[in-house]
Every structure is written in C-alpha cells, then in structure tokens.
Length: 158
Image (cartoon, rainbow, N blue to C red; front, side, top):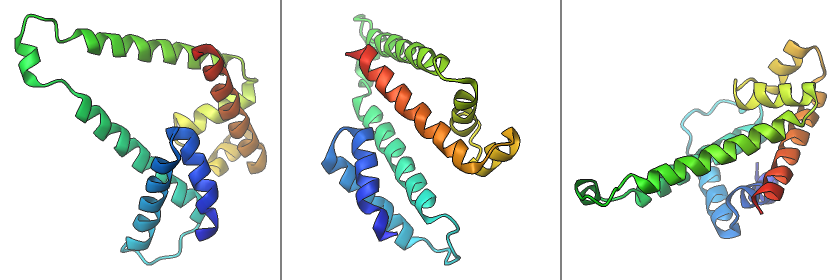
C-alpha cells in the first residue's frame, strides 16, 4: 500500500486544493488501514485506500461546515439569519446546474459509466457487466468523465 502514497497525495491535493491537508488525509487513511481489526486480505488495496481517504475528506468537509454554522443567537434576532444559507443553497444549485451541463456534453456510454459509479455506487466490474463492455473501458470512461467535468467546472467558475 505504501507505493500509492504519492499518487494518493496528488489525488487529494487536487480535491482539497492544499498539499498539506492532502498529506494529513493520506496519513490518516494509512493509519485507518493499519488500525483495522479485520486481518483478512484486502482484495483491492488501492481502491480500499482511496475509499478510506475519500470518506475522510467527506468527514473533514462536514466538520468544516459544522464549524461555520451560525450561533443560535442569530436565529433569535430580526436580522434574517437565513440569508447566508439561502446564498449557499443558490451557489450549490448553480454548481449543480453547471455539473449537469458538463455531464450532458459527454458521450452516452461515458456519462452512463460515470453516473452508475458516482450515483448508484456500482463497482467497475458491475458496470462492465451491466453495459457489456470491458472493465478497462469502464475505467477509461469514468476517468474521462471526471477530467471533462473538472475542466468545464473550472472554465465556467473562473
């Protein structure tokens, strides 16, 4: 598993936008792997490590959102404590609309592989079996979809 460290840090850096934070998450992910109580063989170590790392990123994001939550006193005031939440919701809706536009630009099989993986949570093998294509083609479609969406979102948001 140690051979994936640099690759994982690069992946997390792109997600988090901060190399130090990425290294912290990668370190925590490795600790989770080492501390696990199930001593059984890990069938796909790279995927297992990435899943743990992504879960840690999600947990980190949730903790950040909780820290940014407004104190209860603001809700009692007449200053409209809901305005920031509405603004954030509007931004989220705009980002979702942009993501939908980016997905609409993909070819059918590429979009379908991406959605089956990200929305339905199917494995690459399950997607390959469902669509009647090779597992490597599924992986290529998903990587291409992620690259396309990332590039388009950066273009539109800048």
